[in-house]
Image (cartoon, rainbow, N blue to C red):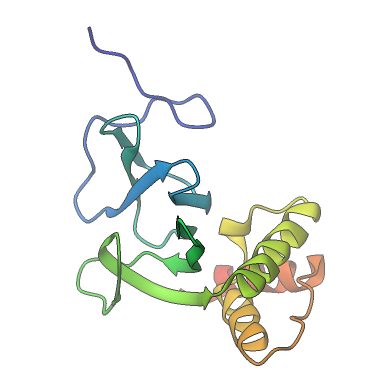
Length: 171
């Protein structure tokens, strides 16, 4: 028996990824290894088994990918990456578990910095905005400020309006 897969918004997802979909391998083994998508609009999803799945994103999408792993002695990795997917022929950076890769807008490791990045994502959501729609420059700004040990500037409705206007007039 075949079950139709549905996105978070209830729409059916396609049976296979369209050409040049960026694929992300996700794993979830409670308190051992946890890879998840914090935000982003999936265009494809395939559940491999209870612990593994593959999700896909269309070109020019932005998503956040969080990786955490632990062993018997505690956390061994905490990482967050915010990535813009690329079109065919565009240059890209490689990233573990992401095929083929993408333009990395934010890349942080260590739980305190990951928590700060998650707080920045939460702040965008409290404005009623989808973090996937935010200006890529904001995520670069958050990356640079957090790497330097500084607090990132808040994303505001005015900055978002300016981003939308710039996106409309510049192809």
